[in-house]
Length: 56
Image (cartoon, rainbow, N blue to C red; front, side, top):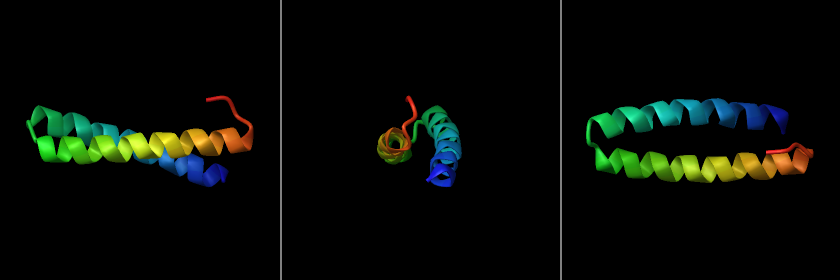
């Protein structure tokens, strides 16, 4: 479980960089897709950390 949380956290960093780049390029389609990915993965990380007994 720890490996999954750590991996998703790293993936979120990359996705935020992509979101910033697509925002600079005014690419609304990519912005929307990345925002959706980020939202779902943040929720997943939150739930997994709660399962591990960690504070968020």
